[in-house]
Image 1 (cartoon, one colour):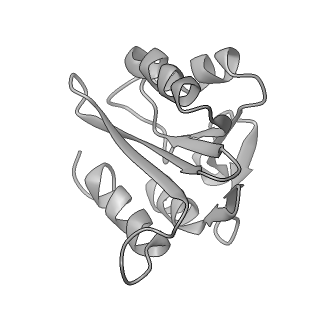
Image 2: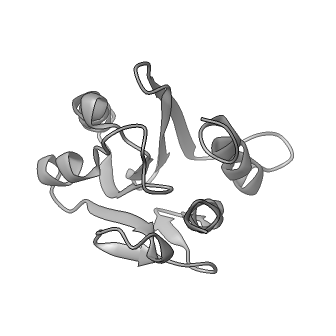
Image 3: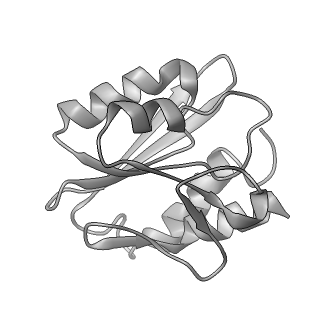
Length: 143
């Protein structure tokens, strides 16, 4: 995917989260890949509280993402989509059904169904971290 999505989206999120020497202490970051649609999925978590968010999960690899969350002993608070995806079916609904307490997130401007609709200036909190870069990415995808 060209433009702000995929690797560019994660680089933007990393710049927002990163201190001068890398990710903040206590932030778990995993980049996952689904080869058919060439989609990157990201898992961010607070290693202390174990609260996590998964970004842009793909339906075909959602079980892999669920296994990883469980294997790492994480509590997945959110499954988020940066935008409505034309290149693959999202895995957020499947993940929500399998992991109690997980809520789906997407930009309000997308018009898509989710538990939480966000707009510019909102934050998504997980543990001690907040992801405002994700909200900017969602807004850009929805314009």
